[in-house]
Amino acid sequence: MLSHSFYNPDDKLAVLMHGGMRSENGKTGLSLLRYAGHRVVVVIDRQEAGQSAEEVTRIPLPHHVPVVASMKDAIAYGAETLAIGIAPGGGRLPEDWFVELEAAVAAGLNIMNGLHMPLANHDRLKPLLRAGQWVWDIRKEPEGLSVGNGSARLLPCRRVLFVGTDMSIGKMTAAIEFHRAALSAGWKSKFMATGQTGIMLEGDGIPLDAVRIDYATGAVQQTLMECATGMDVVWIEGQGSFLNPASTATLPLIRGSQPTSMVLVHSCSRTTIKGTPWAKIPALTEVVQMYECVARAGGVFFPAKVDCIALNTFGMTDEEARFEIRKTEKETGLPTSDVVRYGANELLKTVEGMASKNQ
Image (cartoon, rainbow, N blue to C red):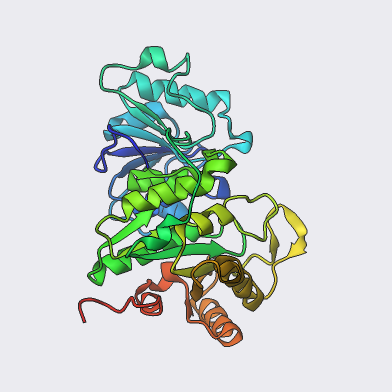
């Protein structure tokens, strides 16, 4: 499992988000605001400077988080670590953004880097690092990986995998909401991060898109075996989708985790596959059948079912969201909700055997 010895879950964060607060490219920063909001003390976005993060994003935050134009302006807010909250095209930082990293390191801040571009040994940053200061390149393949062998099926804990109709639709968000609901219900619960944003939030996990394909299933299995110790349930962050031709991560997640059940995530605003506009997302009943068929592999593996559907109704009114939920339940026969809007407590009860321990 990838973790960092210097990682501190209480570090105060500045989040670099130039142009990303109203864009899908800023989903890492937006997730940090939503789930690490108590840690975020300032956001850097020159396009939104002078406002508050809550005003711009409409995400309820536990305290006022100002938006400033530069790292120079952010220093006064006492951040200890700068998190790169944006994913620029091609995964490389523009020059004017790189200046912000230099200013952060020079001011004594650590760096959390979720980009494919490594920074820990960068010749412009390394000379500026002081004793005890770190740059964490999250998208780095761990050492000592091996191929998978299906042994996760022997784990006694429940293993719930989040699968989707497409990529970038909220699988990580749904998994975190279920994890929080399970903790509140008295379960020993663990969120297993499989992408850079989840790892930033959890402090450990596996950056699956940085792992060579031959070792991807083994990496999922190894990470799960470690984080499942002593747990009643592990909520496994999904990546990609079988429906998206750019995605290769879903099958290793299914085979490596040997799920006991699945949650299907779907964005109501998405009717075609991201990056492939001619490819329509099929009926959710067909998507459910596809995932269940692949999971059981003709009877070789456990016949994991899709227990419920988590809709992403972002941008809809409450009335519109509830209509989509009712419609999806009628069409699929599966319990459905938007766990960000309404919480995951009700859907938690539908996951096999997940009734509250406190009842």
